[in-house]
Length: 429
Image (tube, rainbow, N blue to C red):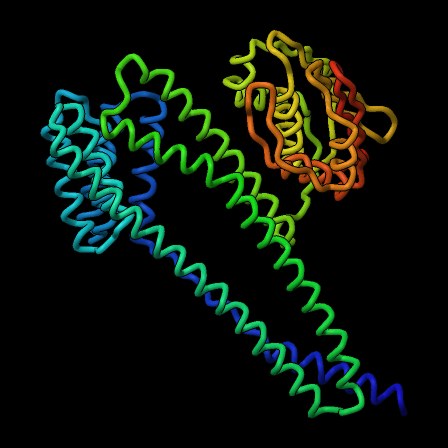
């Protein structure tokens, strides 16, 4: 009898949970944009192949398509692309396109599009040495950008509040429905569900606190430097002779900012269980070579060389994107702490059912304290041999990804020799 009651209660609870769940709205695809997208994809292909004449030809077709199908936003975007592709001698035509695009964007009240158009207008006026018009357009661009940032911030806050309110209301509804079924099970279900909610909320709070900590300590600096630097350039405080060195400095700051943002995004998604492993069999050589191309600017500035010992026939069974992230971070870390004119060694091998990857550099080494931080997963901000800044999130993510794949990572370091080595289990896909 007791067993029948438990089964009945379980079925009723399952029904309540399903009934309380909200169905996600089905999004419909606008068929009018299908042909437009195909044409613009062709134009973008020619643009990437450095064939601006063909790209403009297809953008004109796209513009006709957008006008025919009453797609004003697409019209403005196409005019913007065409204006950017025209040569300097056709500056007047470019401005004509941009003014038409701006007129459409204003009607649509599309601030992002208006901001992009004003930025392009400022660039063209600057090329024409009409600095007063360029300054006017640039100021309009900044006003719109600031307005967009404020709107996004407000929407994010409202979205977080709405999600928390929805989760709270949903939990209360489930508890009420459960209480109506049987009083005897209320406390058990309440405690179990409350514990899960508290754990999830604690994780969200931890992720939020960590993100805000990084934003306040590691993003404000580079972002502020970029803003001040651009203001100096815009204000004419930088001389022609100082400009190359100054632009290299701004590029370095933007690289740091971009890397930190990418790592923050991947880390936060993994903490909220939005990243799942999709292991496949692949050769690591291509991924390693691709990352060396991406990091060329960093290691060339230090005149570093690489010793690759990666047989072309060796394969790895893992999540390809996560392996790409692991390799990029280990290589970036090795470059960061290498001395000028040094060498970085990369070795990959497979024995039985495990693949081993080793990245070794001969730089300044890692202190015992930093090694303990790596093992505990609590790395702090560090600076490389050329002042490169890192938040420690990258290596933390490397460790988490490897552990999630069932592998292991080890670190051996002393002055002049640092070696990261990790292994991954190998299975037939």
